[in-house]
Image (cartoon, rainbow, N blue to C red):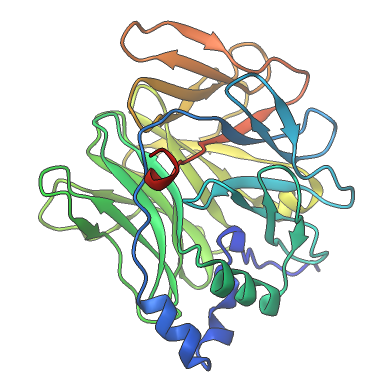
Length: 330
C-alpha cells in the first residue's frame, strides 16, 4: 500500500524535526522580519496539465509562458511564491512514495526535489521565511510565515498596519497555509495538518474578537487541502485526495457550503472560484470551467470586464500572483 502522508512541504515544512537540534538555525527562524511588498501588478504562476502531466507554469505580464518544471518523472502542483518573487515552492510526486517539496527559480533554473537536509539548507541560507501573500477584496494582506519552526498565518491589520498572528502552534507543530479570502474580505479558509497529520480545511473570521479556527472537513482517512471560495462567496472548493490520486496525476475537486456542510464532488457543475486579487486591488484572477476545461480568467475590478487568460486542452488551476518587494521598486 502506498504511504499516505502528504508531507506537502511546498513550503519546506518537513524540515522542522531536524531544526529542533540546531540552535543557530532555530534562533534565525524565531527572529526574522517580514519582507514589505509593493503594490505592483506582475505575472502569475499556476499548475497545468496541458502537456499531459501536471507542471508549474509562469505567465509574465507580456504574455510569455514558461514551464518551469518540465522534467519528466512526476507531477507538480500548488505553486507558492517566496516574498522576493524569485523562488517558487510546490508540491511534487517525484519523491516516489509520497508527496513532497519541490523548489525552482522563476526562470526554471535550480530545479530541485528536496530531502530534509536540502530543505534545511535552502531555508537557512536563503532567508526566505515569508510565503504565498494573498490580498482580500479590501486590500488586506495575509500570508504564511515560518515561525516557531512551523508555518503560521499572519495578516496586516488594515487600521494599524501591524502584523496580526492568526494561528500559533507549539514549535514544530502544525503547518497552516494555502489561504483564501472570502469575497466580502471577512473570512479566510486555509489548510492545516493539526489533526493526526492529515490535511483539513479550517475557517477563521478575521473580524471577530475570537480568532479560534473552525474545522470544516473531518474525514480522518484523506487529505483535504487548498480551499478557495467561489466568486459568489456561498461555497468553498477544495482538493480531496482520495486514494492518493495526485500521485497518479489526478486532482479531485470537491465543494462544500461555507459552514462545511453538503460536501460533494464538483463533477460537471459549472463554477467560478479561487478569486485572487492583485496587490493593488485593480485586478482579480479566478478559475472557471465554463469553457469545458478549467481555465484562468482575469477581471478588471473597476469595470467588471473579464478576459480569458488561458485556453488549452488541459486544466489550469491554483493561480498565484508574483510578489514584488518594495526595495526592488525604488
